Amino acid sequence: MKTKEKQKNGVREYEFTTEWILYLLFLSALALLYIYLTHRTDNIVRHIEKSKRNLVELRAENITLKSEIIQKRSRENLELRLEETGVKEPNRAIRKIEVDAER
Image 1: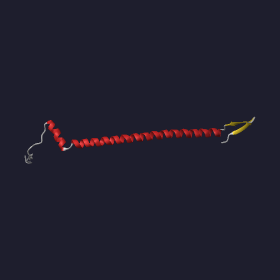
Image 2 (image 1 turned 180 degrees about the vertical axis):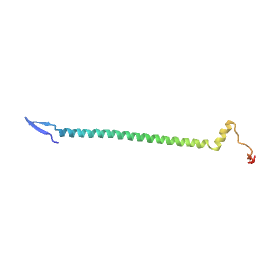
Image 3 (image 1 turned 135 degrees about the horizontal axis):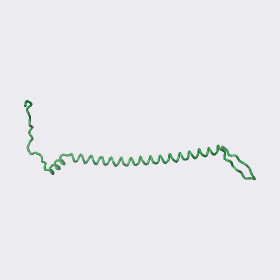
Image 4 (image 1 turned 90 degrees about the vertical axis):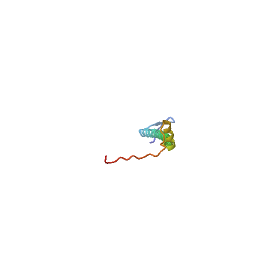
């Protein structure tokens, strides 16, 4: 990997050999690979962080919707909603009607 040195009138001239050129190409390929992997890693980290934020928002929305459903299913709320439509709770006991199996 050494370059050949030539001496001309006290000035050194360097010739690049094929080994030296291949070594520089190898180093530049490694640098490009490093840059690519760094960018890819940054993109993956950004995607993970975005997914975490979305997950937190979806959990909060889920809890809110569950509490609304539980609140709407409560007996008091159901009675209020039914009164608005005109349906009232009966004020006497309901009788069970039995049908004979022989008929």
